[in-house]
Amino acid sequence: MICEQVSVVPRPRNLKILGLKCHKTENIFDWLILNMNRAFSRKKDKTWMHTPEALSKHYIPYNAKFLGSTEVEQPKGTEVVRDAVRKLKFARHIKKSEGQKTPKVELQISIYGVKILDPKTKEVQHNCQLHRISFCADDKTDKRIFTFICKDSESNKHLCYVFDSEKCAEEITLTIGQAFDLAYRKFLESGGKDVETRKQIAGLQKRIQELETENIELKNKVQDLENQLRINQIHTSPRETFLEQNHLTLLAVEQEISLQTFSPN
Image (tube, rainbow, N blue to C red; front, side, top):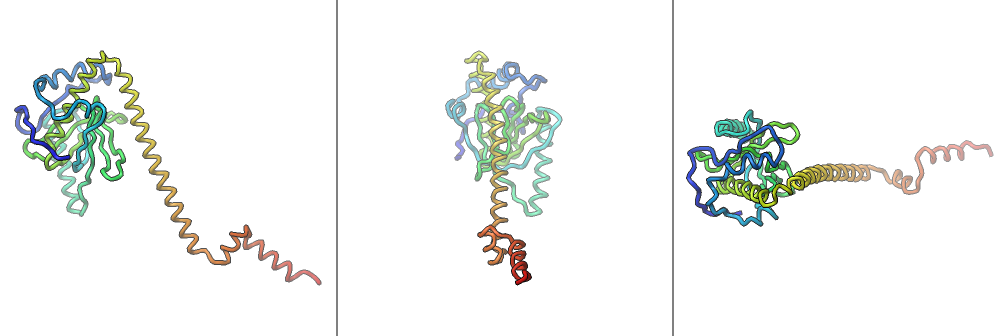
């Protein structure tokens, strides 16, 4: 995606675009009421860059380099994010010195969350549901870097995801902000009736991801078996091939030959 030049509401220097107040509750109804109004009140007059349909019915794709994710102690905060960025940059620098390249990923942003995929195979590596994202920021000192903090659904730990995008870091952050805004508006319009539906969709998406992973593993196993079969066929002698095709075993043939040789006249 080619990034457009967008006008941005003035913000504090360094890291910070939005921080969503985190509470113990995982109920999306409470979460939306507590967070969305405050998080986007200053953007109510802002014209977003994407159409509502693009984020609610489809998704917005971006390409970026994935520096990785690391556990953080707090669900929000510029210092928390800055420490995570510093840590992952250092780790990536070590890997680069060892000849490892920074992996490229595709981000798919919608009102349901942020998916991180392999750009070639489209395999989902991480599926960060929107109601679990508590903080999102781009770095004003390094305009290539953007991050978000998401609570892991299995471990319940807060993980900070860090990305490198040469041209789109700020736009990606704003797109996530627009997704939050649309989710909140749709929540108000429906009166909260679609909350359970979204939970079911999130559960189904997770199950689909698990099935896709299982499918890939099974394909790899089948491929390994086919390769092993080819190797065995290459090393099989013509005599063994003949016996196998005629459903005979070497032992049975040898026994028959032995009987013919030593049977009395």
